Image 1 (tube, rainbow, N blue to C red):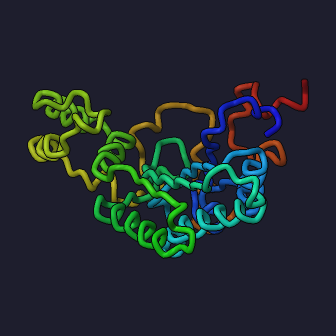
Image 2: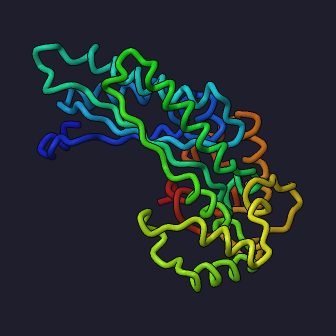
Length: 268
């Protein structure tokens, strides 16, 4: 904090990703609630009174309690402010802004086998968080934002799609889908019609859980990390087992054969 004292104190950003410790263990975040609260305390002592938090909704095994944990953690951070900053030294009120994006499984990760939520399921999770936020004692110090669910579903298709999705992209483009990264230009109806026209089942790429022996469109690409390692990590995630940081212990992911990076730091 002492190294950024000259920077304008607008806000500091933390990315807990999960609202509960259980959820952070599932995704192997390696961050405890104590770490987060201590970081917030240091920020508040350093003169900040605005904190941004980034979370992910819809991750594997997520429960209602995990969703509500986002609001509870946000509330605890406001309480830290009131605990560590004397009243006479407070420069305005504290504000904690929690933002959630929706989980999209990606290739070459342990979650490439995971099912993805539907649009309605994503929105229901956001509503759970929003309701819980309003129940908090310091709710006036809390603000909650969430990502567009329809865009997320499309991201899910593009993330794990095969060559059949290429026809959908071309069809959507022909019908006016062009600047879709800008929310004001995105029209979900164009994409849904393109899937229907091309006879491509959207749910096949999103809500379906893959079997561990399924062949993926990207399996021919060698990224160093082995599929067997990713399978082990997927099982660890479901079992809520944390994998140690690479600097603590090698987990045999396979990337060491590339001859660089963390694997060889101690040899330099």
